[in-house]
Length: 201
Ligand SMILES: C[S@@+](CC[C@H](N)C(=O)[O-])C[C@H]1O[C@@H](n2cnc3c(N)ncnc32)[C@H](O)[C@@H]1O
Image 1: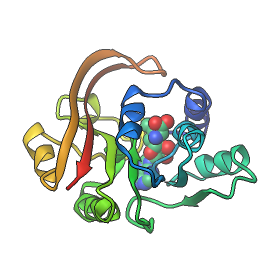
Image 2: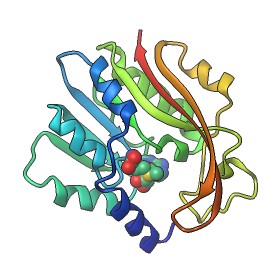
Image 3: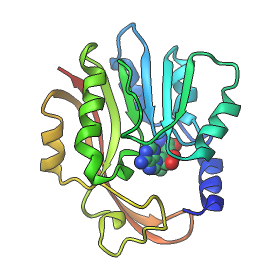
Image 4: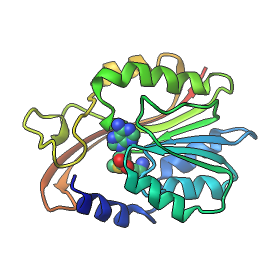
C-alpha cells in the first residue's frame, strides 16, 4: 500500500466497530489482564482492551501505525507500543493475544517461529488467542495477487493446516468466512478468512 492508502486505511479503521469475536475472547480471560495486539494498526483494539482493564503490549511494522497510537494513547503508561514486525517483537507472557487481520501478512518463512513465540507467550496462563487467518480462496492468496495492494507477503492456510497449529489449544470458536465484494479502493475481492478463538492447554 502507498503511504496515502495506509493513512486512508488507518483513518477508516481508527474507530471501527468492535469485533464480536474479541468481546467473546475477553470473556474467556481470567482476572489477570495482559494482552498483546499483533499488527495493531490505528489502535481500535488497544482502545477496547484498555477500557476492559488490560495492560497492552502492541506492535506494528508501519511507522504510521505506531506514531498514531503514540499520539492517541499519550500518557497511558499501561500501553507499551513498539515498531516491530512479527519476528522481531519480544513477546511478553500474556493472558490474551489478539491478531486481527494481521497474521495474514506474516511472511511464510517466519510463520512457524512467530507462532511458536505467540504460543509460548500464552503458555504460563492458559491464555487466549483471538485472530484471523487467510484461506486459499482469498484473492490475496492467488498467484496474481497484486503485492502492492496491501502488504507484500501473505501466509495462507488450508483448514487442515490451520487446525494443526492449534493442536496445543482448545478451540473455543472457529468460523470460516467466504464473501465476495469490493475493497475500499473499489477492487473486486473474494475474502476467505478463518476466525479463531482458542485457549492454550
Ligand atoms: C489489515 S490491518 C489490521 C490492523 C488492526 N489489527 C485492525 O484490525 O484494525 C493489518 C496490520 O498488520 C500490519 N502488518 C503487516 N505486516 C506486518 C508484519 N510483518 N509485522 C507486523 N505487522 C504487520 C499492518 O501494518 C497493518 O497495520
